[in-house]
Image (cartoon, rainbow, N blue to C red; front, side, top):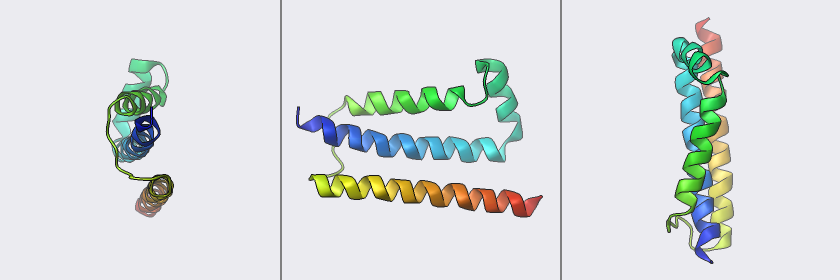
Length: 98
């Protein structure tokens, strides 16, 4: 039972990074949003499905990126900061390009 907080913590971090990566790809490839809307009925649905699948599948595996609660909290904070930086940088690049 003790492995689940660390395992789901790691899966949260990976799911956030996967979501940010999908967002970046979607922003850079305009046709992807149209394809996703036609395929899934909504342009954002596939991102949620993939994020939840990554979170649950990795959460159930015995992976452990952090050795204690403090490192797990730092992992959460680091992923949030990296994700925010990527999204802001992408928005700046897209705004500058037109």
